Amino acid sequence: MPFLKGGETVVIVGDLTLEKLLIVVVLMSIILGGPRLYRHLQKRKRAKLLSMSGIRDIDKMDGRQFEFFLEVLFNKLGYRAEVTPGSRDYGADIILKGKNKIVVQAKRYGAGNKVGLKAVMEAHFSKSYYIAQDAWVITNSRFTSSAIEGAKKTGVKLMDRTTLQEFILKINPERKPADIRKEVGPASRKCPKCGKDLSIRQSKDGQQFFGCSSFPQCKHTENIAN
Image 1: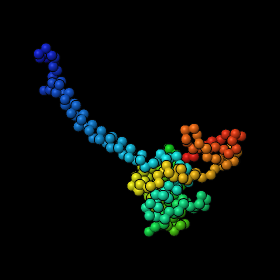
Image 2: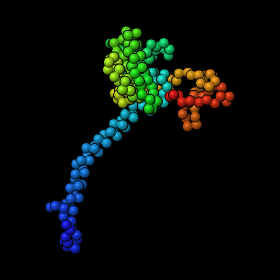
Image 3: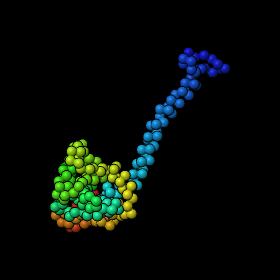
Image 4: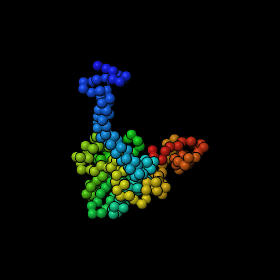
């Protein structure tokens, strides 16, 4: 109950005054909120570090550019990496030759699209076809639960977005994803509307995109990272 003390009203809660209770509440907030704040700061620090991997440039690549960037990474590790032809690759985009032979399927996907079980099965098949010791699927995205389960059953190794970023930072290649985007052109494509070749164009803000070579008759455009 409240009582007067020197012209001030002081509230008693049990044996505590309101002032002491506020101090206790503040201290408890610090004690309980400290670990949460620390985890939040660590999460932000890690996100900033991972962004230095160049993942945003990878997100703007097409599949062919992504394959050549992975070739750069594995060459830096000492492998003899070889990008397979675009057709009839039998499930392997890159062959790594070193102490062991490794087949790699590269999946550069758009935001929100996850790599499914099919990629794991193709990588598993390519391991037998190329007589390799290991099979990997590497993506800038995530994997579905069925892909993860299939990888466990078949022994295929998975590298998702976060693992890929950590991998890039650890290897620290001289040629970054931004360099590969400049050096390696995307795979050629046909216009889905008229069947003509698509040509690389550049917007006013410097962004590259595909436009139909028959422009202005056909005004079809699409992103390079489709």
